[in-house]
Amino acid sequence: MSLNIDEATLKSVVEDVLKKLGQQAAPAAASDCGCSKPSASAKGRDGVFQDAGEASEAASHAQKQLRKLGIAGRNKIVNLVKQTCAEKAQEWGQLEFDETKIGRLEHKVAKLAGIPGLPGVEWLAPRGMSGDHGITMEENTPFGVVGAITPVTHSIPTISCNIVSMVAAGNGVVFNAHPGGARCAAEAIRYYNRLFKDEVGIENLVTIIEKPTLESFDALCKSPHVNLLCVTGGPGVVNAAMASGKRAICAGPGNPPVVVDESANLQKAARDIIVGGAFDNNLLCVGEKQIFVLDKVYGAFLQAFKDAGAIQINDSQLGKLTEAAFTYKKDGGGCSHPVLNRDLVGADATRLAEVAGASCPASTELLFAETDADHPFVMEEQMMPMVPVVRVRDIEEAIELARVSEHGYKHSSMIHSLNVEHMGMMARALDSTVFVKNGSCLAGLGTGGEGYSSFSIATTTGEGITTPDTFTRRRRCVMVDNLQMY
Image 1: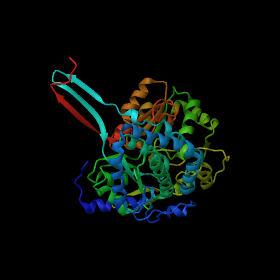
Image 2: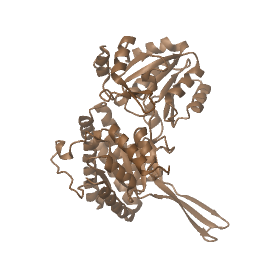
Image 3: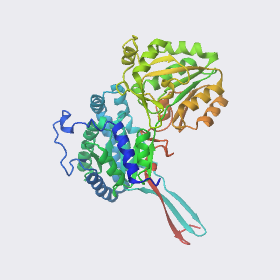
Image 4: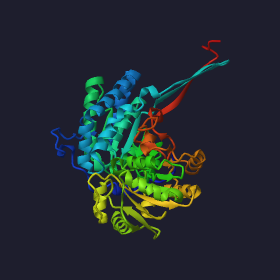
């Protein structure tokens, strides 16, 4: 996608993005993480590079080698990644948790343990056509090298997921990880590259910039060796990628609402919302962020929520937490907008309760509070295990407020209802990429529901939950007036 944006504007956008990513607090070198392995040299070692241009060129060279290995070679690499994630889920989950210090360790382990269930090369299906004028075959072929931007919320899982999908499609990959998760990401890339070299004889098929900076991000966007960008992050980095002039597959922001109507199984709804909203302390982009409950069952739902283990905080406690969680800064137009306190993103529910001046059992997974529909916890993607609950008159108001709070991101939404008409109304109104009925958000990613998972859900550019097919070009080969069987 090309937006005809001049280089000065692009540079300004990228600078703003990387400031928000914490670029000024660059991570230590991988050799400082407690491992004994040497740091990457200037030319790169085991896929870890200092220079984005060299990393991109190395991945391009490796991708040409991958082509010679064919589908069988891709399949072997994909299976190596899946096997590694299963075997190292505990170790790598701990490594990421120690670096990022957000979320829940057991859920970071679970995300890696789920990588073996992702689609691989079997997902790529050719299409054949035959008729009076010959035969035609359409196939999915690689782009070449994918420049992938990964988030701090799921650093190693996103990298691993991307390798499965992108290499299954026949591509090489160069990663620019979020600075907050760059050390563990580099460690995973080192391991993968050693494995690939030993097993299939290819070096640098997946590369990474050890210390991500403004320059490395900009260089990936401009590199002649990078043919496609894949961004998993917030609106700033998405906008910068889309302004690069390259095709970009963008997993943008979300603020998923939940509607509970009078026909719902309230006990199940309460349990499901806790399972999804508390997963990894609400770091998932699909996670339940705000709940709209019909007046007829409002009191009963709150009781079911408490019975399921959610802890309620009162108005005074909510006020303290809100003051700590959000600050307000002036933008260029003079309007204030809330900015998250990053120290509380992905924090445990017990930590949030402490900030609010409340107490709760150590086992508490999720807090909740009664709020108005325009409360910051409703309107902002806060990524904390504290969900606001809003009382509404009827299904029409519930769906409209859910639509407003979702901001048109078209990311994810949930409804708990046995009324098919209500389900249809919400599906049409929100038009979300992931829509779950009577289950937790995790069901939308194949856990508790049918389907497959991915940590890159391309909502902004419309590809949806990414698969190997997402990272291919559709090519057509035509034989005129020959080879048909009739």
